[in-house]
Length: 274
Image (cartoon, rainbow, N blue to C red):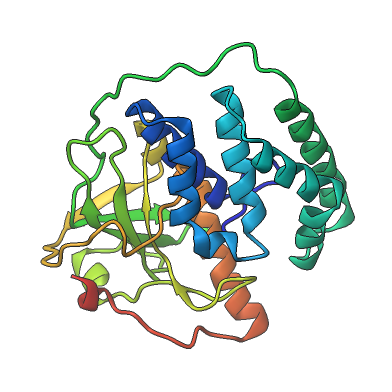
């Protein structure tokens, strides 16, 4: 579960479910069928105590926006909020009382919203085909707050779709000099083991929704990626500006390694992926 704020929508699971819901909704699929498909596809998330609430919140909000909120989903969300289950998750994950109090306000407001009568259902949108801002094999550099360079590689890029996801592998590049092509080829993938990450390679599908999201990124070079990647192999991440989504996460990982002296227990090299 990737969380970056105390708002209902400020986590990857919510964004993924909400986005998938309206992808199907805009394709003309009925709300009942969308909901059942999402529940079936997300059983693993639903069975994770620290993440399941985000799934139900996203499903409830999506159904409410379509004026078809299911009574069982509504009651489930109502129970999660009124019994304090979600707050206990946040406490277990280390949130302080200031954050907890803000989360309580957000939850109560969210419940009031989905209990209210929405004036009209959200209109279905006509799909617009967009191309990804980066291509397969692009070597991308970004800057850390201390001025060092980091790096990531595009392993796959969706062409001719409404949601032009790219599969991004973030590396352990962390150096003063701007990286060159060979630095990317020789790099290791960043493995996340801070907070609730369990030696997870930082590889995920994401969207740069517009050019502003990519302003902090510099294309250095391009390498050949011979492997083909299916969308099912890696998780989809909610679209956010790159500096929030990745730079902070990489910074947090390196800081954790320094403070805890606990390095990840697995290694994945870029050469293995290309």
